[in-house]
Amino acid sequence: HLVTVALVATAAWLFVEAIRLPVLGLLGLVCLALAYAVRPRLGRLPKKADPLTRDSHPRTFELLDRLGQDVGGASFDLVVLTREANAGTSRIGLRRTRVLYLGVPLWIGMEWDERTGLLGHELGHQVNGDVRRGFFLATSIQALRRWIDILTPRSRLHSFLQVVVRNFVRYPLGWLAR
Image 1 (tube, rainbow, N blue to C red):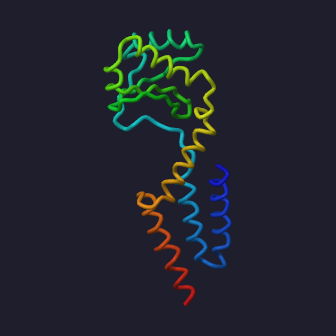
Image 2 (cartoon, rainbow, N blue to C red; image 1 turned 60 degrees about the horizontal axis):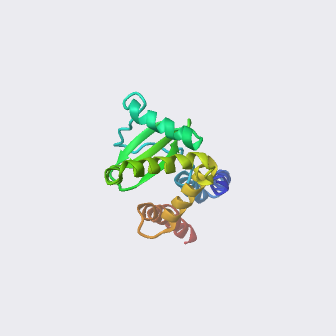
Image 3 (cartoon, one colour; image 1 turned 90 degrees about the vertical axis):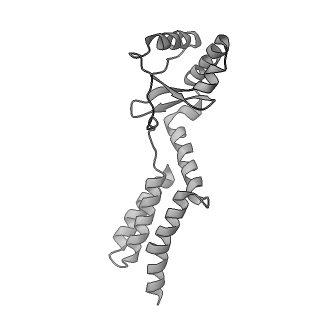
């Protein structure tokens, strides 16, 4: 996150210096665009998600609460069914809502004892102090993934930044160099 802060500070400095050399303001905009792209995100549900809640599925959450007590931790606040043959957990939003993502193909292919084991495993991520689940480290890993997207050719963000740099940095600097 220090790189993001440094980008914002550099942009501010470039804007101040743009009084003497206006093209530096364009470089400041590029720094702000990069800082915006790699900013920490709080996470949110997928757009088409229709999560299961305690009110809509009380028996599901009763099971999750009971398993949560057995493993020594809190249960989930929401359950999101997905089309993937996978399961996972995350925390989203300012309140750090605990979400269980449960792949329907995976769930259907399991016996009841396997399902209980899967739920216990996912609940274990909430209990065992998994450092990747903490806000600071999780958002840092997300920022690194965004940097990979930016710096990897053929990503949409990489292509967009190439256009920005070409049109708003390289051409104006070339024009000034004449």
